[in-house]
Length: 53
Image 1 (tube, rainbow, N blue to C red):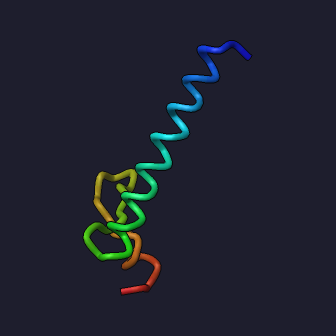
Image 2 (image 1 turned 180 degrees about the horizontal axis):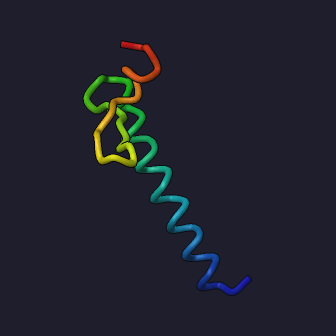
Image 3 (image 1 turned 30 degrees about the vertical axis):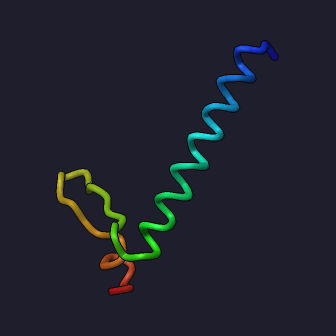
């Protein structure tokens, strides 16, 4: 593997870890909620779909 590829992978891994730590904290504090769009364009919260509300 080339040095540039290793540096890029290291940067991406580090960035993902920072985002993961930030997002996990926000989710646990209830500051953000997870949602997704259906194919018809409607926004649906996953918790309500899973019956967790």
